[in-house]
Amino acid sequence: VIDPEAPSRLALGEVEAPRPQRSEALVRVKAISLNRGEVRRAGSAEAGATIGWDIAGVVEAPAEDGSGPALGTRVVGMLASGAWAERIALPTNALAPLPDAVTDAQAACLPVAGVTALRALEHGGLLSGKRVLITGASGGVGQFALQIANAAGALTVGSVRQQRSEACAREMGAHEVVVGDDLEAARQHGPFDLVVESVGGDSLAQALTMLAPAATCVALGASASGQSTINVSAFYLTGGATLYGFILFYEHARNPIGRDLGRLVALVAAGTLRVPVALEASWERVGQVAQQLTDRAFTGKAVLYVD
Ligand SMILES: NC(=O)c1ccc[n+]([C@@H]2O[C@H](COP(=O)([O-])OP(=O)(O)OC[C@H]3O[C@@H](n4cnc5c(N)ncnc54)[C@H](OP(=O)(O)O)[C@@H]3O)[C@@H](O)[C@H]2O)c1
Image (cartoon, rainbow, N blue to C red; front, side, top):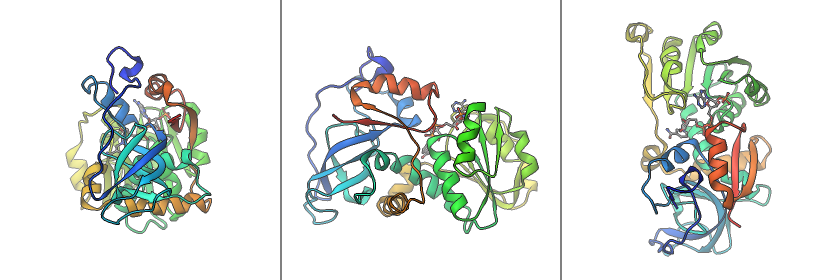
């Protein structure tokens, strides 16, 4: 729950037990992962509110309408809010069953970061041989996006801010990596058929001048800044370029994420997709881990066990 006095305003507390709707399974949560967005949200949410999106757990009571997995099935899933809890009511269209080969920690990292990466890349169509620029390439979304784009045959360029993040982007398969707040160095590797842009500010503004005709820039984050001053004439003179505003919960409402979660789980089980779990801890440390995430003190995903 939000506790204004606690580290990062996050603390354990008692809330009401969930009451599942007919299309929701009751899930006992085993592990959660943290995303930059919900940690940011904790900074302004009102005292006593619950937050959280990503979980892995076990079905304690299947959905009454017969949809979704049976009692005792291990699952991964996403809630729009309040997933960081011992038990949650999870819509069956927002979950996928887990095979033994995928751990709770791996699974908990997949919903927001993994599905965002997958769906953002789909805006590029068939990626084979295409030039794809991924900003924030060492982040949770960026590391999944690099791997999935590479597996699809794209030529990938990643941008990271800190020098120490370069190795991570290369490990995830980036063909080229540019380092620092200035994206200009990426221009020599363009023009790009697709940009997955999560940094905002100057990064978005620069990326919009590096598009190929008919290319798409998917703007999905503002890790550096929510304000950009763009060169609109450079953008429209490209010809047919598109700027797409991506927010996962809108995408989920149009096309539920359960199936895509299943695809990601299969890639992890097959060893094709690596899950960059950088930190594992008890959820009693949620405040401290959230602060480390805000400070970019680790590279990859943080998993907390609901122990
Ligand atoms: N629209 C959506 O539905 C959606 C879904 C998921 C995420 N997001 C947003 O997308 C962004 C990326 O998410 P994530 O989970 O991948 O974040 P993350 O794990 O914290 O990664 C942040 C990435 O951005 C880079 N970066 C560059 N400038 C930065 C700055 N000023 N502050 C922090 N990082 C900076 C980091 O580089 P270094 O490693 O070098 O620090 C890192 O590669 C976040 O803003 C998040 O809120 C949006």
